[in-house]
Length: 218
Picture 1 (cartoon, rainbow, N blue to C red):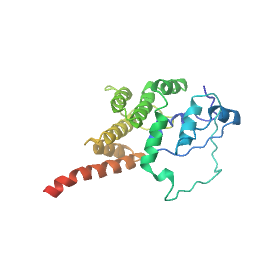
Picture 2 (tube, one colour):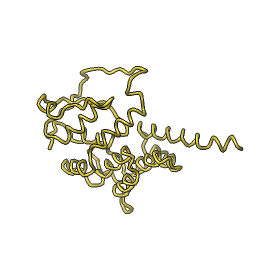
Picture 3 (cartoon, rainbow, N blue to C red):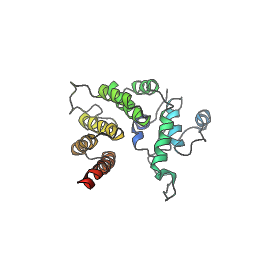
Picture 4 (cartoon, helix red, strand yellow):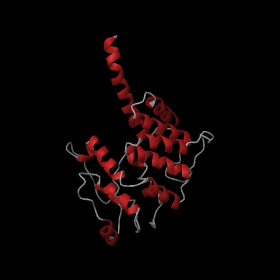
């Protein structure tokens, strides 16, 4: 398994936080890079694919807290093509099984419920919505305390009720369910976040579009 030089969650959570892809270029020894190799066939997202495969191999990763390069976005940048980004992340995530990701979370000391959150997110990106709902139920059992913070010293020190509302709303968003806005509004009331506001905005637009025919008819 990997011997991280920083908090292992900093990279491991890439499995979960794929709903908002962000460039992360780790410093990796040459021999590790040669072993893992880049998948050059991907039109974009090769960094995400590389990072996830490094997580499953042996090596040491060190995140540098200082700026070493600058990245600029242009109108023609591939990273601005949301549909392409989603399809690329889907093709990357689909290569990593639930069992493999679950073992990594367990190895680094994350609870089963935290791992289930990650597996829920992965399933959403693989368009496996039934499986995503299953992991959602595992992550937030009926008798759990919604105010509990499972990761007080982790990368997501947020009350479980926020995570439950966010993940439920995100799943409903992909299912085009009517409850997506309600769940995501609840998450924003608990704790405003960039990803929560983003998903709420998308859900609100979809709701308005769904109502437009009725408004026109009236």
